[in-house]
Image (cartoon, rainbow, N blue to C red; front, side):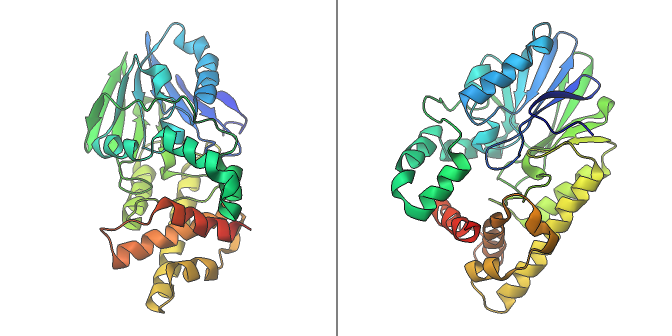
Length: 311
């Protein structure tokens, strides 16, 4: 596997991953696929400085094969807030992703972080998660092309298969499969050595997404966060999801609240993964699926639940 170090690393034939250790909150990965005199970028980063640094490193490739297409794998800002720096390209996402993006504009995060010092333990947690990023001055730049289901994108002599697997992590998750390189970029369907985070669900869709990746003829798998992996990494994520599903459902049947269940679950070896407190969001999503599938829990409540477990 590719070394887990910050920067651009070749992971397959004319395929590169841009990695950002440690893979925790906001430290996402991106990808670059080149063919002929064109390149396709998989995701931008959480702010303009980080995205600019990435694009600068990519110039050794994009200088002769400029980025003509960008794919946003989902709507979270750490995979799309840098879009304005590649706004000359066609930006592609799922329909659901494009609809979800405006719900959390950069200005909202900028305001939240400005208020964080006065928010007590929750504010301290938010600063720990997002204090390294700068959300001021980011213009939300939406996709210019959307699709549902599947879309094949041709660049040069190769075809990239975009496959919608959401709702799962978010409402409109997409993976980008490069068949001739036996490589797939998964967005946040995969967190490797970090705890998955189920903002949307249902759990069953996320498990199906893992199965779909396992069925692909690929050797190299670039996750949304964490080191480059193979199918063993996919199986571990699936095991976590199934474990949380069982544990949360059992506590729901026993009459525990979501917050009580999240605190009661013993994570075992999964507790060593980064950001283990995300179990609170995952349990809440499973409870919503069981009790109130049409409702959502506000993000401040969810972050408060995680903050209480992270101390």
